[in-house]
Length: 225
Length: 225
DNA sequence: TATACATTATGAAAATTCTAATTGTTGAAG
DNA sequence: CTTCAACAATTAGAATTTTCATAATGTATA
Image 1 (cartoon, rainbow over the protein chains, first blue to last red):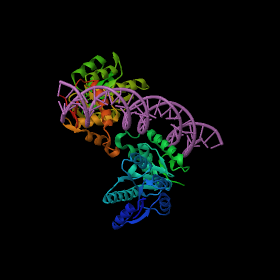
Image 2 (spheres, rainbow over the protein chains, first blue to last red; image 1 turned 45 degrees about the vertical axis):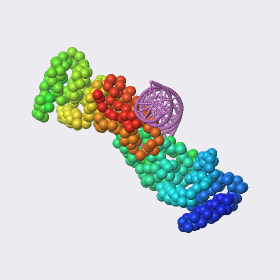
Image 3 (cartoon, rainbow over the protein chains, first blue to last red; image 1 turned 30 degrees about the vertical axis):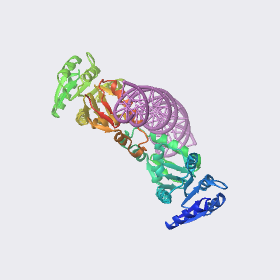
Image 4 (tube, rainbow over the protein chains, first blue to last red; image 1 turned 90 degrees about the vertical axis):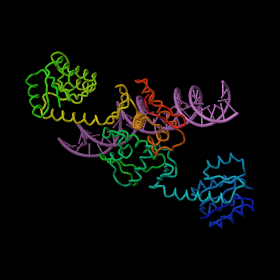
């Protein structure tokens, strides 16, 4: 487990590094923004602890870079008390947690653990098919790294497709899976067509591949090629 | 099993009666509208086979009377071919099936059987609480014999209430039962309030009893008194 | 290939569900 | 008996889902 500490106060940084090493982490230290950016560019850290007030800029810049890189590093923001605005900005930018100075080292350790645990959990809870990624825990779908804004039915639909790739799925199965017995089946599949259309349109926004192929008279097949 | 045949052609009537008696039914015959009304007033037939073209009026009148009496008799309409308009009217009025002349006696028998079977099934699939009746097989709710036009969520809601009468139901249970884990619970119960309000309003249309009592801080209780 | 028929796609309206803001109630504390 | 805060009711509006009418497409047949 590699951790990067971004902190300009040498005393504090030193004690954090000492503590975390004792806890079994590989721990590195950057004392300014530029160096932090360089390091985070070179390595994929499991977690980064970033002070916001740095001599050469705001720690928030690191977060932006991390997110631009699509790194999966967890990020904990550290700042002086009462910097609530930063907190909001930081979390919106994609930080995973927030700590106000002064803080207990055990507390920091606990948060790091929590983040790493969650990252692992999350990693097991994504499904990928070519350009499409589904994050189950967040009910979130990305196509070519662009987030799709899907409704619940659309999400259920694509989840069912991605769970059954490369095989022909009868319309009836789709209807049954999405609506259960709530519906008087067999009247029509208009609602399937309808949601399908919307889903296709949303995928097309970010991809030129047609993933949902119609199989005339039977149903659909989810595949690339 | 008592069956009434309403038919003015004696030859046809006779052959129907003969056939059905042989099949084990108690079978009676009315050769005009007035007599049919009188008979159906006196007895509760399991099923009535009604010709529409009668010398003294339309067989549809019998259906109306039956429905006004809240009789549970099944009704099969019989009419000459191409009387499609009647078909629609008849089924809307509450007929259970429709047959065009000339018809096969075995066919008639099959339909009678089907209707009686369904009536029996249906009877087992209703729940009643004071003025409120729920017909599960049709997802239909009546209050004082007036049919309520409910949406799916409203139906689920009243079904849950009527299944748990006279006890306090926490809001959370309702939410869980109606939405399962689809919802991020605990944010708010606005959707419960919302559907509840609509359900209450619809019940109030036909009843002055307040069935859904608020239990402050906990949830609701479904009862009369 | 032309035609008819069935199936699927599309767009827009209607219905339902959910959300958010406001107002009204209730019960506890002073 | 007030006042307050939490809770619930209400309302209107936004978002989603479903329905419906129509267009487009595919398949089989001649």
